Image (tube, rainbow, N blue to C red; front, side, top):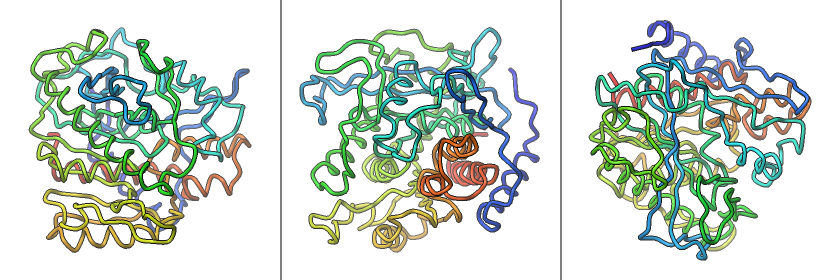
Length: 414
């Protein structure tokens, strides 16, 4: 098999050093390696490379749950989910690096991405040009079955903005499945037509769903159901069947690489809420990481208190990481539910914090937004609002270190 020529000890030391930079020094580390490149179509943003010993492959799954109508747009007769699977590759010879976004999704994001993130520029970026570090359809390294991690993005975000952390975990021996929640995500491109939607489906969100308790409940319940549904389709894949609803071919040996006795879930914001709740409800999930997600329902009245979710009332039965930032504008809203989880989990939950960071530091925006600022397309204030002031050379390794060390402790890949 092909491996990246990166010493494991060197990786660990560099990650710890970078983490210390963002937690203690406030962004005094060296500049990030990933830098934007200008073209006639706008600048091309670059994702930071993964640090693990494995090359990574990627494929997409189109999954259809015919037992559910779409809860956000009822004219769609079934619930559809798009997922990307990142995995250690046996070889990448003859394969091409995958784009971060499909062409249709990139075009929609370029036109409407500011709906979810008004800090982003209206023009000047070639969103379709950013490539991942993973190779489309590469054969999976099935020398051993590997733990499986599912990722649920933040409200209004697509799975594609969780590419960097997914590649990092896959390069260290995990199979990582990033899950879109259509109708919630800012854009999702499907491989086939369907009644009630276009090929690229935009978000239905037009305001903060926490201000609408009914909508917030629907979003979270849908996300939890989506995650549990995806696990079921992965069980089909591990059993040798192809769960892709369009029947598209899968990478060689992908199903044989899955160890579904070791499943973890991590998520950002609303995805963090869903990750913690999915673990509480589904015993197939052995560990979860909540990256700054609320663990109480939206309050019925402004300024009121929402009902604690069961995982906050009764505690986590399995390991749960609560990872936050000092720059989250709604940080005070976590100070009821997160301490409740810690108090009731008998040591199974832990809480960590990134300083000089803000809410979207857990996503690819941690690396991309500073590139936009350097190019003069984002102000320093908007950069701080989205990801904080920490240098991405410190912030990106810090996030990766926390996720990797948590799952290595509870779902070791080696």
